[in-house]
Length: 311
Ligand SMILES: Nc1ncnc2c1ncn2[C@@H]1O[C@H](COP(=O)(O)OP(=O)(O)OP(=O)(O)O)[C@@H](O)[C@H]1O
Ligand SMILES: [Mg+2]
Image 1: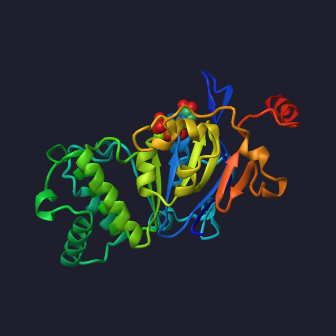
Image 2 (image 1 turned 90 degrees about the vertical axis):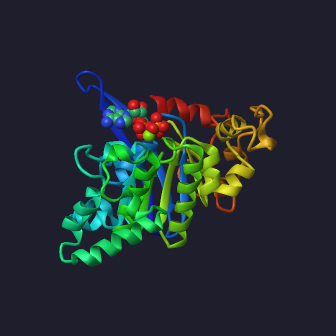
Image 3 (image 1 turned 120 degrees about the horizontal axis):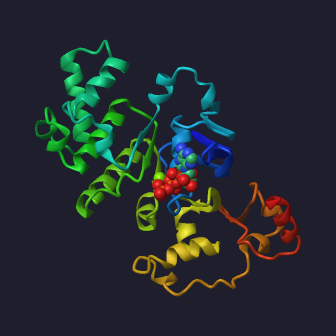
């Protein structure tokens, strides 16, 4: 397994004097393998970007560990070495470019940092190859300023930059939200191409249908906790947590089966499952490769535990 999150938590100090703690991410564990797309789904504020930022070492990790090929990422002292393998692309592509400079400066910068000895001709070839791999016409985009390019083009140039570095894991945080429908499909298909080349992708989104379209596995996050995760077919085909069911119910056209109001009286899948299926902290494996958290039910013993947890 390439990237592994093990009991990862994030606590922010908030309030005027930093006197209050906000647990943005609690005890999250999942993996992203080579050539695998994992979507991280949840509502606004559920902790998706915080997780992405911890993976990208842009935010410190309050608890648990993140490993890349078994190595704790915080112990990789050479950040350059890490960023050659792991890169992020974010929602707003404009914010990643300096409007004063031509957009292809993002390529010049990685040449300086990572490939100082590559000759100019060879480098140009590589850049053109990377642009073509994200379906951009080099002649059309090179030499232009950010305002002369569309959001989708800028977004794809950032992905091309990741391709040039030949990274292994891409954290894509809401990269589709700003794009129009036809560009969306382009970028999604591009991600599929990259996956076929062995790239692992963590696809962060609040849009379930996008997650369903691109991912092999799905992790559903609510208030910083994993409520359900597993093969995308399993999670979408048979959601076991009422929260996932209600999310799916709000996307009626794509999930006709779940268009009816979710059955909130359904028994809690976690507590229905035998104790030996509780193979991960707080999660029960309800079928092979499909985990679910307690629905917040009143199963015997849980009330007491909740009181303790809240204390
Ligand atoms: N730097 C920060 N300092 C304090 N609190 C933060 C910080 N960054 C995020 N938070 C809080 O952590 C929680 C999770 O935020 P996060 O940005 O991870 O959510 P998200 O799932 O990405 O949401 P969205 O879909 O809106 O992007 C929120 O309550 C947010 O206010
Ligand atoms: Mg976010």
